[in-house]
Image (tube, rainbow, N blue to C red; front, side):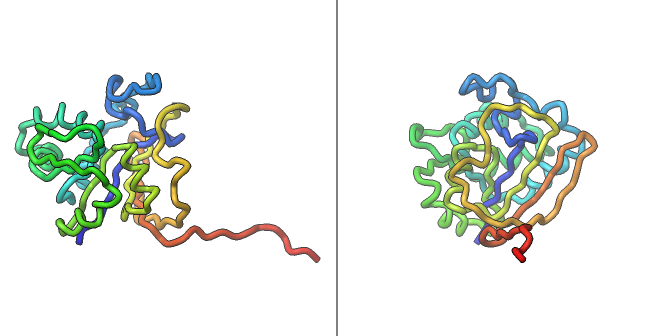
Length: 206
């Protein structure tokens, strides 16, 4: 059985909204879209290519699917690994409003939390989530993510959608590896490590 992994671009203050462009997601009056672009250097590209090389299928929220479907089918270079993966592999779309998808290989998933385990059984390697804020919240609340791949960019925005919300399940995580690009992007990979552990620095009473 494969694993469910999530790759997310974040600001230092945890915002994940509209990393790719000014009009990508303006909901809530968000006006800072495109904050990834100035930091997309060669090392960043290599990190993303390595992540996509591990994919057997994708699980995407509707908004992310629509953004990808409007861009990646136009990238026809056979040497572009990311385009080849996204255009060629199965794409499961979590949606309550749309049922017909014109991007080849796309299929509806009505209840992602209930269907993830069965989806993972269909693939030997990774079922990957990219972006997909609302879907990510559902998967986090149900503790369904096997590995988090977080790329933290050296910017502060202050407002916008965040990856970890109030429904996040308390848990301990293990840092598997970490790297920093020349542009200052910190790439960290985390895996679940059981329940949250706590303690105290208070001095014992005499």
